Amino acid sequence: MINNTCINPGFKQGSGMYEVKNHTVHFNYADGRKVKIAFLGTGYDIKNQSPAKLTMSFDENTMYRQ
Image 1 (cartoon, one colour):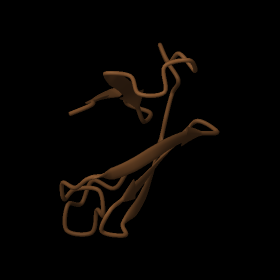
Image 2 (cartoon, one colour):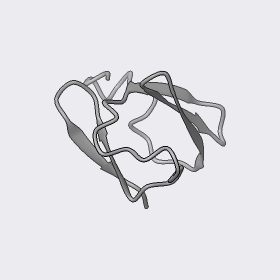
Image 3 (cartoon, rainbow, N blue to C red):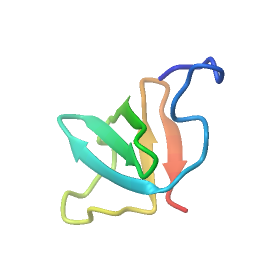
Image 4 (cartoon, rainbow, N blue to C red):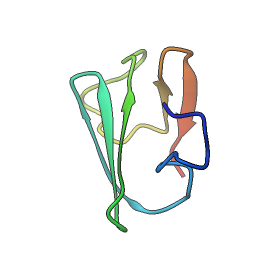
């Protein structure tokens, strides 16, 4: 994950779709941005493709669906 908000394409809010594949979440924003973030898989149920929260990255940040 890029911590510098000036060059981080995922910093700006937006809508779109996401896909979980190979321990990575691929975010495809409606405005054309594409962002990939490492996904630990902790507590992830493959049968629930749209969970309320996901644990992300090496430092276990929690991302909540809005």
